[in-house]
Length: 250
Image 1 (cartoon, one colour):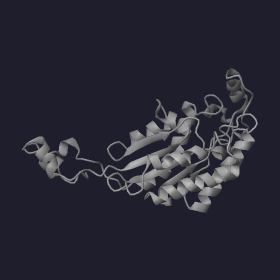
Image 2: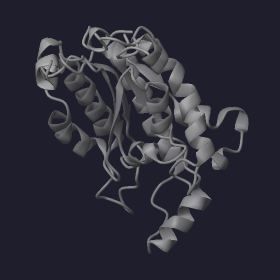
Image 3: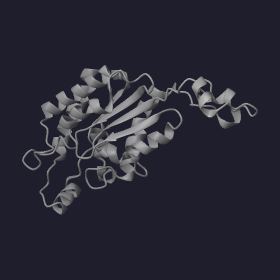
Image 4: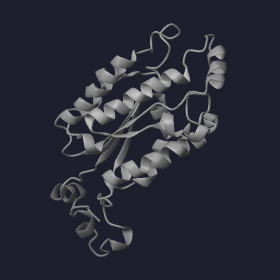
């Protein structure tokens, strides 16, 4: 049987997806040791993990681009089984020091709700969505970065905390899961600076911290997913197409 004929006889595989939507902390998550890379490794041959992180973006821009990333009615062949929404590190920039990225906290809250509403309209219900708060800000380290860029300190940890609270409020109002990274990393007065590479972005230890808290939330959404296509020892030796062109759920 010719290859194209064989393929034509088999149903196409429904390859589920996990969507990671966020700013630079999401964009960088596929770097070595990143939390997104760890998710992709955990879920290999069960679903694709899509990195849709955009460095420097805030929720004002995020809600504009989201319809270009996931379209309504397109989830039949590649259903989104889980989605993380991880913004706030840029929204919380101080207006006087960084007006381009700054988004007022009330608007940030409304924008997050818009993102959740759109995802629901695109067949990603609230029980598949996880909102992640921005991590805490280590002001001394980030101030050094700002000076290197020729500007003054443009974020404050206390202000980031206001955005984290707003994010948690959206999760409660919308019925989604949430991961309060800002609070968890500062729990019991621990030194959270080790979780950050430059005061803002995650260090290797910070990536590990995030993954260890996020995975239980993801796992409960994907636990029923089968391994796609048979284990190699289970492939029929004489006629492999009998194994490989079935429903693919093994």
